[in-house]
Length: 344
Image (cartoon, rainbow, N blue to C red; front, top):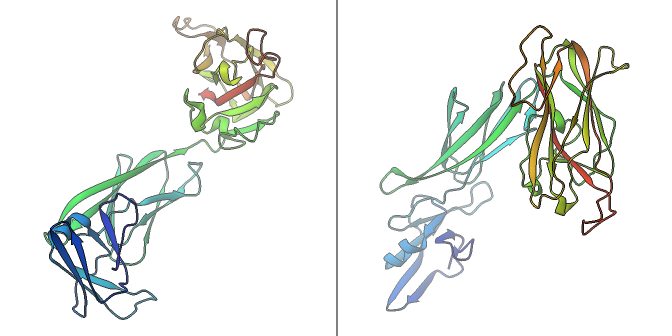
């Protein structure tokens, strides 16, 4: 027939090369005649099934091949192109200097791209057969929202819109992380720099975002580029005891000027009940203050005197073996961490 339902139950039919020159579809008390003609029509690759039902005759024409494709033309009341969602592509979600972003625009569609709250870009693909690429550069953290429009070619107006979005994060290029513990390959959260990439995990750890350490401590050193007094340092942790993921017993924060000799800053006891029967995510933070200043609010968990360090070492002590009351008692517990928190 030259009509192909790409997705069962979908109202849209793709127009393909017909086998028969003439066909008749019997629908209850109505019939629709499909003719292969040599008339020139607007090239539209999709027809709405509802529109087809409203017609008595459906005419298609197969023109000579263009770029290796058989270009089909057809006429049908109130039909218009199939709307595809554009794609947003980039090398990495997290970057340091600048990042090239590519929007893949589907055939015969136009897009409006909002880059954060500062830039609005527009592009159009007039090719009926191929996607087109729209490339631009971002220099700061932003959310990119991309909208694409569908046009009714009988009314020549936009009748439908879809959108997609993607978030990109710029991190300090002077910030470096060195891990002294190997994370599990099943839970990488993005790799070696995951703990300083500003991407936070949620309590639903199954969708990713958490770096996992099975039966071992996590030890990491953050190089902030030069000696600095921080406002705070902390670590984001997760517990889901049913999945063997437990809070660390304690978190040790240390500072160093040369990266070799470390001085204690503060040790934080997590003090979270290990019998909680649901997943929880929590940050454990040390807030710094000046020796001559006022003690900051009671909301903070731990405080320490601010001193200038270039290197900050964070050690999360593993819970150890699961306790006797646990259904998997004796098995090694997991550490799940998402971010070393640093604020200058």
